Amino acid sequence: MSAPAAAPAADASAPDQTFLTDVLAGLSGDPKSLPCKYFYDAAGSRLFEAITALPEYYPTRIEAAIFRDQAEAIARFVGPGAVLIEFGSGNSEKSRVLLDACGEYVGALAAYVPQDISGPFLETVARRLRNEYPGLPVLPIIGDFTQPVTLPDLPPHRRRVGFFPGSTIGNFGPGAAAKVLRTFHDAVGPGGGLILGADLIKDGATLEAAYDDAAGVTAQFNRNLLTRINRELGADFPVDRFRHEARWNAEQSRVEMHLVADAPRTVTVAGRRFDFAEGESIHTENSYKFSRETLHALAAEAGFTIETIWTDPREQFAVAAMTA
Ligand code: AVJ
Image (tube, helix red, strand yellow):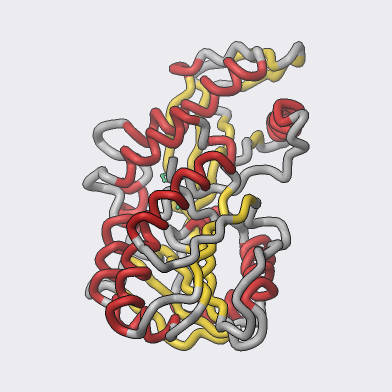
């Protein structure tokens, strides 16, 4: 499960209630929408893994190449004896390059702090990391990165560096993205750092293909949200009557995913009826794309100053290092 999206700040005793409330609110809107954080049930997380291996979906591969190519520079930015905090850590796979590079070029970290919403999974990952990095304190914290971070007992007087890869930040609109980064800013404190992965603006055809692959995996990922709503909320969406669509919205710098009704339809969710006109869509995701300029502006809004932006030769993806 390397699902990168935020979970709701759910009341643990009533997670279905939050899901239901969010779904009913989204389907009552005009235009209709659903929160993309609900993509990541077990099936959705597996489908997202499959997406990252698709030829059209370049972000994961290019970001990994940047981490490899710039490992030494990134390690020097983190600095010796720092605490590395990964927000929404999943399987912590992307941190390994950083952990290795810090060990090789600048000396061991003081601690690695993976933060994720899934407690049992976090413990499994932490155990594995402790085995593979003997001597590295791994201090997991359960949490949702859209909420203020409660840090564990950390070695005092250490530089803290946040890590937020994968362009997960792109799922948030401009205001919400600044708020998320402000949370990280407060967690790392003055003089702390943040390493942020962000997808860059490029031609619409490349962007739309990345979100509408030939094998139809992204379509399955998108429709799985309706399957999940049917199963968990007792709804009756005719799942394959909703067409997957990816649209590059250049004005707003975002790829939108939609599910479009093939004909007039009425769907019932928990006893409430929702009417769809033919061609009416449910807006299921925004994936914002950035430029150097918008990254600088976003960082500044959250109290950070960007020191370096590393990219690939074709400037498809950016890894920004910033200081609080
Ligand atoms: C995990 C949010 C970075 O927006 O590219 C992939 C999710 N959606 N294909 C992205 C996603 C459709 C992904 N993020």
